[in-house]
Amino acid sequence: MNDCRTLFSGFSTAMIAVLMILFAAPIRAQDYKKSFNDGIEAARAKNLQTAVDLFSDAADGAKTEGDAEVERRANGLIAKIEYSFGLSQMKLDAFDKALEHFETGIDKDPGYAKNYLARATALKKKGEIDTAIAAFAEAASKAEATGDSKTARTAKQFIRDHFIFLASSALSRNGSRTSRADADEALEALLMLENFVPDEDSDVLYYMAEIHKVNGEYQDAIQAADRALALHRGSRTDKAKIFYVKGEVLMALGNNAGAKEAFAGATYGSYKASAQHYIETLGK
Image: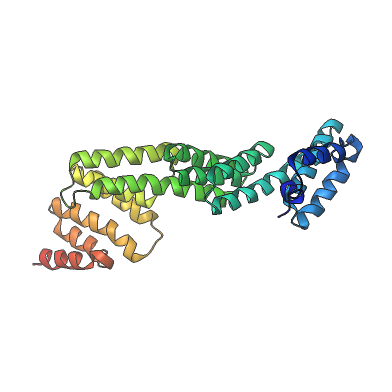
């Protein structure tokens, strides 16, 4: 990847400044289309920093001439190259430098959602989780507005994963002796998730069923579990946890027949032995 620093690496700082003054003559407005075409060629040759410089000249010239289409296209290409630069810095764990590139890309083309997603990811890797969550939400919103469904799904999934992890951690920290305080903490996490991503999700509904179970809200727990089962699209092993919590609630209500039926759906993975035990016990 050739850029100005590579090109002039053998010169002193003062000589570089002189050369830049000599050769960086202002682009005349009528030359902006040539700058754009030269930028395309530079990008094809993988001289990306040169391409960025040419596209910047093209965008400035197009703006002066009132050519909104060339200005838009030039800035859009800059945004994509800045995204590439940022990803390269991410691989080096240079997150601040990466963020600079993503921010530049966003400034050049606010409609290119991948820069928003990458910015959020860089913030996450820096450990700035709260800021990253807001950034992922913005990325999802921008992506949906521009029809980039893949980027929107990715951004929303990180938000889901984060808050579901918080809910799961709260519910599991005391093993089988989950307290109301634990359940309340889990509920708070899921309500925060709903603020950012209001879409229904089977995992969220499963944890809501667990929360209702702990709080003795058995009918609400059954409704949440049934809705989770209806939405679930994963494996039977993953689905087993939903059947299991439904079985626990029905057993607590004294509905042994219903509990036995629910536990039959939980005889997979880590729930298999326990579910089979309850099926045998309830059948007596």
